[in-house]
Length: 402
Image (cartoon, rainbow, N blue to C red; front, side, top):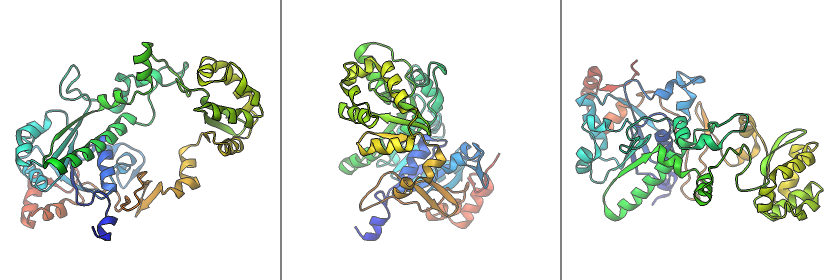
């Protein structure tokens, strides 16, 4: 492989047709795009609805959309029309991957279902469907957004405090976790295709991914038969593992073993705590976490948080300040790790995947709706007159409808 191809990314040469909207699918395909895959985002006439999920906005597109769609090209297609379906079939002729998250059964209504149409026509195609609950079973076919799935899958029940009650996890981790799982699944399917020569169907459900991410609460329940309760900022299995106030702000400390706990105690000038029978081992500390919390809070309340964190890190005790987003993005380590990335007007998080030979790259900002409709169509053999005719019929779009 030439050096030029290496610089194109680990997934250079892979073509992805992205029919997804909102979060999990666009997040998955953005990861692929960051690493060199060609991603064509196919949008319905009204566009991906998260273009409207603001403020804030940039030239009419919301930050929610902007954060999930860089390194892609956009084409507007009305799949309700036969001509629109024919356009998609043309795009799929040399595609490796298609992602969709329509309501289950919608692709079949378009006569574009995997089993009925695409499997035979494109035997090497890898098809990933993302849905709320899957297509069958007691909840099969029902819609689901991140927070609804968090609630149904037990996440609320272990998050929050006794004052707040069950609480949503602020970051939409069901959607993002499903996006990550879908990316992993797609790479597995590509690897298997290299051996078999065949594509396959991948059934991803937000509910399944949410249940799979319940660790350690699910493991605790299955072993003890005790229903996990809200733990606030504490860890259900480890102590001390909590947020503590200092005179300069809150910090978080996580002691995963006895050596780290002893280091914490010695930094605080209370080395004897490490030999206290109530706190000698993690099991003891977990059983006596209320007493331990009281002792540690008293010891830290007059400390400078930044200074204490620095002293703890010097002793290999994991500790850090409770930063806000502005502090994260201005931190020198964020810049050092290339996690503040920009191109043209766009600024976002860099890729966390650091390859030594084929690094990911930020090449283009998120596209305007239909910005690439003509060039994508031309690249797939449509003439200018064909394109004009399809736009006139409304099967191909360059501007959002209402």
